[in-house]
Length: 359
Ligand SMILES: *Cc1c(COP(=O)(O)O)cnc(C)c1O
Image (cartoon, rainbow, N blue to C red; front, side, top):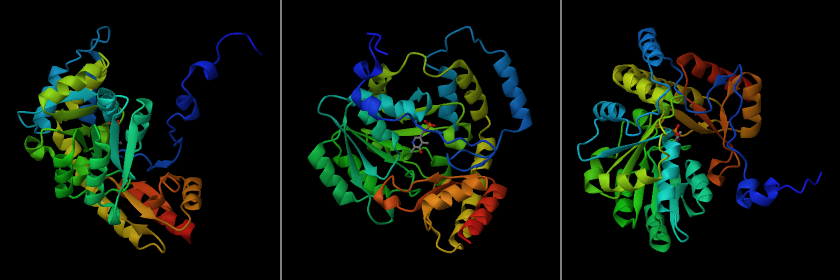
């Protein structure tokens, strides 16, 4: 019916209409090993503390946009160096978007290795910024020479390096990152979403590289539902990026709850320790299966090549285990699945079910 009124096709950007919304697989009734969530809940005593805090939260008021108490707690818990400023986001996804928005001009370029976290490319597209993907080398290592050439050619305003990388799980060589940081004509963002599982960080090197920012999140640590990411770096850079932040991007409940949980770092530390321990067990279990080739991981997931990834993915799902199929997303991820490290029991079910479907 032609009503004479404008249609989305006439008004919405063509590239937006041609894209699809971020798709989240339904996990109803399945063992959920697709999204790098921590499988553990919080202890009852801490939950009761949180219930009280939530009951008293001033929900009628806008949140304090500067989040002073939460930032002070983060500084203590994460041992943020004194000269570093902290900027908070609604998940680190929002911070990635803010950084790209802040550097976006008609000619600017965002650069990252490939394969890597997909949202760097997505937000570059939404900001109409050119995106240059530099292929990773053998074992998904940074190709330092290739990267330096790409920097020389494209002069990127921002470079994103996930450390460890998602979806490959490896930690890039620190000296390669330093060479990139020295050559970069703009910002270098080290995305440490998996820092609790890597036990490595670029944070201590920040004072030697003033154009480097470290991006973190509490999502993979066990608080994905809170939506809280944070950016660390020199105050002069963060003050500029702060100008593109939505005024009240971190809600009252997130601020209060995150502050209280972070005051008990031993809870999440212990969970991360269990996940690191079980990652090693899962890796061994996968490596023993015929035709399965797991890659080494410093994150809370394991990338593995399997015979016929799409079919194995469907058969696992039919048997109640949800994982991530990466086949088709990048040539180096052909026949690859990504398994989040779950509880010891979930990992055992994963390996047993894989053995059955590969049978
Ligand atoms: C999961 C992930 C994020 C997003 O984390 P949120 O804080 O939940 O938005 C960012 N970077 C990498 C590399 C990730 O894997």
